[in-house]
Length: 566
Image 1 (spheres, rainbow, N blue to C red):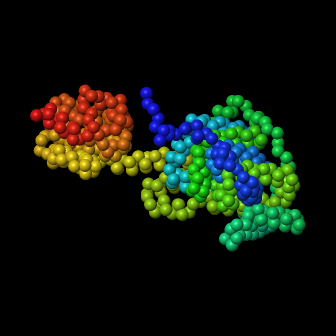
Image 2 (cartoon, rainbow, N blue to C red):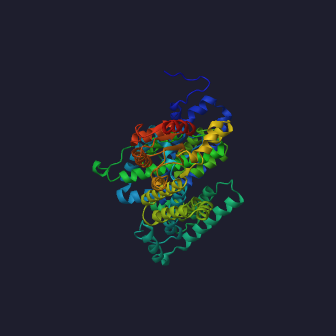
Image 3 (spheres, one colour):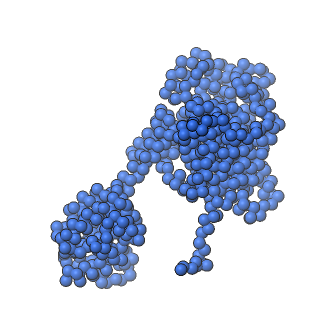
């Protein structure tokens, strides 16, 4: 029986499921905090309004379906999430995936996939698997995001230039030739509005970054289009405007037999949404000095996506740009995100008819700025300069995402990243003889017997060698080659594993073969300094105490070896 030390309390794993809203409430919530959250929530809502509609249209959905996601999912993510400042809603990273899913299975199929993705996120969160999503290599993230940005940019050219294309291909390879063929149908009014809007957005961000440039541009161009009755396509002419109420929640009308076909899309939505939300939470931590709860955040994302789909909204995740805006607006806690959702709801209930005259070319300009900001040019340059291996991972992920599909790009990128990691880890494994036998602490502690024995190892017929680094299957071949060249017939063998953090089954089997060969020669073999985890791996692989003797350090092994061969 063991007793907990009251001076070192054990972590309570249930804390990982407590929403940050509860934490903020326990700290004490004042009227001043509410005012700060209200100002921040209104600021974020102003940014979210045009983005939600633009992302929905870019995804092949209706503008109100992006607003529903901001309202329903945005409220739930803030109320039940594990990040203090996270703002949830539709994100640009989802545009390609949503458009592809809608094209293949219809909007009802997409809603079903979103509900399935929500269930997967709940499972990941409740099983405390949130930390594993963070292991996606950085070059994969940069390449994947850049690939999505390129596809988004290409998808907005049609509305930006006002081109007439009856059936615009979804795939980038087919889309580019179709856009070139349609260039003679360019609309001068739409192009002028789009280009002016794009320039105005960048100029305002440069000269007055605190102004809500997206909303200002959308409102002004909508007003100009209405006053001068410009002959351009608008939200009203294409979608009939935006409804001024929320729909009733309902399950999507999808046959049960089609759910199996939706599994890949659901997994992609869950993985992309989970990773994007945790990435946004990490960015928020860096800006605010706080710390998020990964599993709680994923659980909130799961419930949010289920609820959003029931109301007919898009899939949602943590939005990095809106979260950063929330922090810069001096939000106090999750209430700001909840109020942001309520402010968007007020817009839908009161001001929805004003969206009728918003030109699609202007919303295309908004998405082009989003796509531009998604590409991390400084990170791309850093990766291209740093390593050939990471360059291959980056370019493979980017090209496959653009030319094939998101799932293949992400999957191949992760596999290549894992291979690159294993190759690098294998290079850290070293096998040395009669060196690195003792830790620095042993020598500094004045262990004279150990120091004397260190100098005598070379002449007493005892072969001592050390393996340093992670001993896994990637390094097994090189270690095996070295072991085959070590010593012809030593009187005893000492294997120092004090510098091995872990050993897998492949690495352990190499040592089993070496130990059996040594055992047949009649030379005793000692394994010194191995951790409990490494010993368990070796024993399970067959390196039993019949073949070797496990001792705490090299000095003890050398002393016992001398007794046996004396």
